[in-house]
Length: 354
Ligand code: NAD
Ligand code: TYD
Image (cartoon, rainbow, N blue to C red; front, side, top):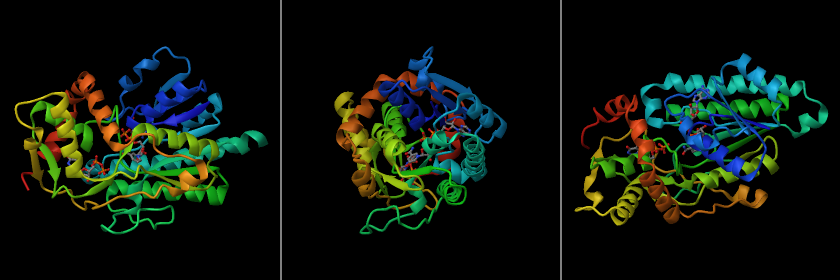
């Protein structure tokens, strides 16, 4: 079996659903259920004995040690994190706690666990750390995309905390011989993404007739990847990745934020016609402090070594995602009814028009 951390979040829940659709290998899912964790994402696995949910913090060493001893997983897949850049600007301490301290605690638990395994179990064990392209910082318009040898230059508290965790993972491989794998992926989109992130936020606001808050001039570039493609890449890295290595994952789908928002408006206008185009709801607001201008991934290594490539292009992926959010407005509404409101007020209330 495998141990997944953060499996009630956006990517983790997609990963578990895909994993159990493709295999019968059980999953222990350790998640603290922060504001971003939502067991509703996994409701289709209710009563499925292959999924065991445990509510807990990755920093709880005693709990993690007990889970490892009891379930003896062949791998730990570490998704749990604080993941939203804007929140990291308002409350960086949570990011240091979960992303840095949490990864450290998990590495130490893994090291102690592996020491007790027999030789063949130890040889098979993997610690897969799910990270981000944001650790590489920002690119100028004509810079080549990030590769695995691009120097780290994180710019936001979120990126810095993920960079720190990547360094810990690297060191635990070099110093202690832990069989680690690190994946650095570009921006994901798809079902179950929390509606504070660009794409689900824009879909929700567009449908509600609210302004579509574009930071700064909206010309920042992100390299978008459908979440299912990210999950498939992680499965490939887990099976055949070389311990100690990093793998960059991306869709080669560079788009400006403004073009993403235009595309979403156009899809919505087609699927749910309104009197006026949703593009008219776009509102330019004050930029994010330290906002990275461009991210782009060179995914050549994972393509060459592991034969992975994305199955979804951004046109079909975005349409699929919009259709999912249209069908699951109940899911969004339940999230928006709680503490989420406080966040919206905090992040957007004081921004004003740009
Ligand atoms: P998310 O915020 O949707 O989910 C994070 C999950 O981790 C939540 O279920 C939360 O409850 C859980 N969690 C948080 N703190 C915890 C703790 N201390 N102990 C246990 N569980 C805890 O995040 P996501 O978008 O699914 O991202 C998952 C991982 O992928 C993160 O490590 C993130 O850095 C990385 N990543 C995300 C993207 C993206 O575009 N979303 C891109 C590349 C990499
Ligand atoms: P986000 O989804 O927060 O991902 P990240 O910051 O990790 O790339 O944001 C994607 C891009 O969209 C980023 O350049 C910031 C921008 N953005 C807006 O313009 N308005 C918004 O309301 C949000 C949430 C993001």
